[in-house]
Amino acid sequence: MLLFLSNLIGGSVGSTMLLSLAIIFCAFLLEDLAIVIVGVLAADGIISVPIAFLSLYIGIAIGDAVLYSLGSLARTHPRLAHYIDHDFTAPFRSWLGNRYALHIFSGHFVPGLRFTTYAASGFFRYPLSTFIPMAIAGGLILETTLFSASYWFGSFTSEWIGPARWGIALVFLLMLFFIGRHNLLAYRAKKNGLGIDADIHTP
Image 1 (tube, rainbow, N blue to C red):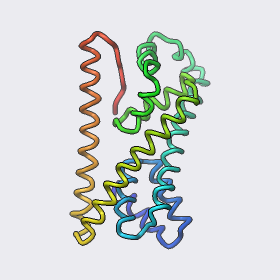
Image 2: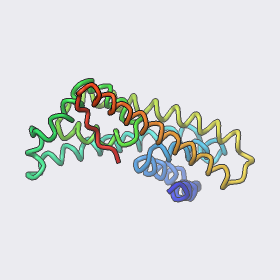
Image 3: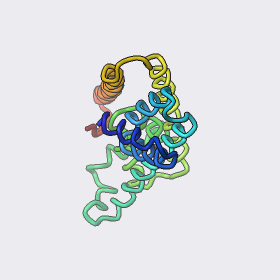
């Protein structure tokens, strides 16, 4: 996947429009991976920083909107609609509604949480007035942090051999994934220990 996204973006270098569209598509698919790849390519001068940053965020924002819309669409399906006010989903709905803004903001930082909470926001029809600013803030902070780190890494390793360079970048992403997953599992264990059902479905 790392090679696929890198080749897709690299193959669009000749056209600014195609390059921007390729970045948007990649950020829509896998935001973390796309940000790291684009940050390194920007450090190499292959992509201008303004185009890279704006295109990445457009892709992230589209992904957020699609997840919310999928949830909204799901609630219109007869087989799924009865779960809106069902005992099965009540614990998760209660958890999501409690500190809703924080959960949406955190969705970009915890593996698996973004899909679950953003789609559920549309399914349970939580207000866009809270969802939009929290999703924007979370996406911008994630992008700024990862892009800056990747740009610095790309500048520092500009003379390194390609496979070693991308291998280290992949290890960095895997570390972020496992750290986020560990924190999520620790949070669930703490809630369960307190007798609070905070059931979050992770991949």
